[in-house]
Amino acid sequence: MSAQASPRETICVGDIGISYLPDGEAVVSAAALFPAGTTELWDAHRELFDADGKLVLSLGSFLIRTGDRKILVDLGFGDRTVAFPAADGEFRSGRLLTSLREEGLAPEDIDTVFYTHMHIDHVGWTAQDDALTFRNARHLAGEGEVEFWQSLGDHPLAAVGPDPNGVLTPLGGRVDTVADGAVIAPGVSIVATPGHTPGHCSLVVSSGKDRAMILGDVLHCPAQLTDNEVSLAFEVDAELGKQTRARIMGELEGDTNTVAAQCHLTGSAFGRVMRGRSRRTWTSLRSQGVS
Ligand SMILES: [Zn+2]
Image (cartoon, rainbow, N blue to C red; front, side, top):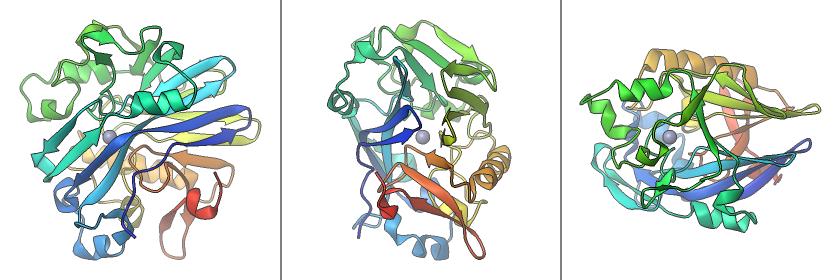
């Protein structure tokens, strides 16, 4: 069966709700996006591809509801469909506000936006028509993330973030920095997971004995559990990214109290890292029959 972008779906972590809000999907060349991936690796993960042989990656955000707080984690790709020649593919998106409305919420209900990092597929809905989309929200990111992108100038990496379309301009620099370990809402804390970008962070959500980890782009697809050496072409520090991925996946492996969440997965944005006979594997919550 060909890969499908992850649907809108909610899990409960104790008293806290986490919903995946679809924005769209990217269809790309696996070889271009993950240069170290072998034919054997991709043959073992045919479930990640569409009928045309393109790798499918979901685009979307997570909504956390804790007490009366409503937090969006990342802001998708935005309302646009564009070719992505660097990976011989296309990004198609524009559904995030519809997904939010289906959750019974309007943009002004969001009190906090947290960027795991500032690549273009995570900041897309920051503004529309030169006005902030989530106008009542504080916008937060990890230490060093904003400064890194501001320092790039004409460096080729600047093409993937954060602001080739001026979408961050209406923020006027009002992104507040949060440190490793910071608690941004009841039961929601930040953990620094650098490598993909310098200020990249993940979130730990906990309530009672239940826990979830929103990974950001520590991991992009389950094939990276098969071979940790397979990194995205756009890692800022690929070696540090591999170390971070190995560390976090090691922590999650076999941890039955913790659900992992990732916005680019297909089938379901939620899953668990399982200890296989010779390697780690990803099991989506949907395939376990849990929703
Ligand atoms: Zn991403």
